[in-house]
Image 1 (cartoon, helix red, strand yellow):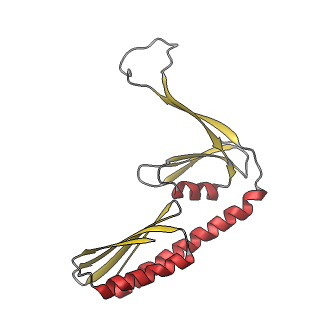
Image 2 (image 1 turned 90 degrees about the vertical axis):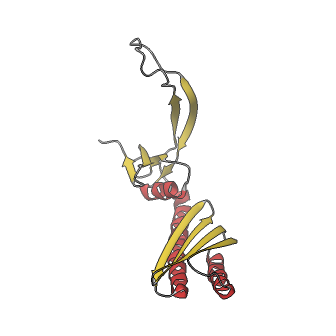
Image 3 (image 1 turned 135 degrees about the horizontal axis):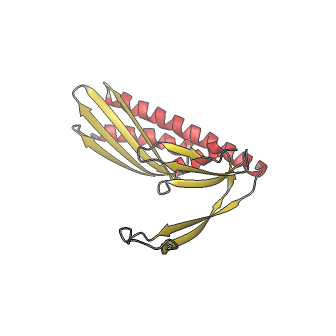
Length: 188
């Protein structure tokens, strides 16, 4: 686990750095997939802030805590990160234990990127735009909770197609520009 520490308006003393390394080392014991940790310690007026960003097993976990004491801020953010990691591990265990019990079928979805570079020209009624990219995506059966978890854990994906395990229909989950998730499912 690689830990980098940045200070904003605070002296990064050796005891402070050692305290951060010691506290974050305990996270390594509770979740062994932590790869990279970036810590920002800052002081504004009387408020001491600790922000931590972790890259762990393909997910990013972020936490921050603010108090009147830097050591208490570090303790607070480590507690928050521990709770987040425990929730993630519990979801992962539920996901893995339910994996063999899934019902439903996997559906193949076609994804095409169309060339609209001539969008201002007039086209004949039967005109079809050129396809720039084409891929087939497997919409695996999963619950809505599992789909939400998978999309939240994905850094690069903004859309997830899945077969709803409860209804056996094709559903989509997508990340909106404001960061919220929208769920699309057929009616009827």
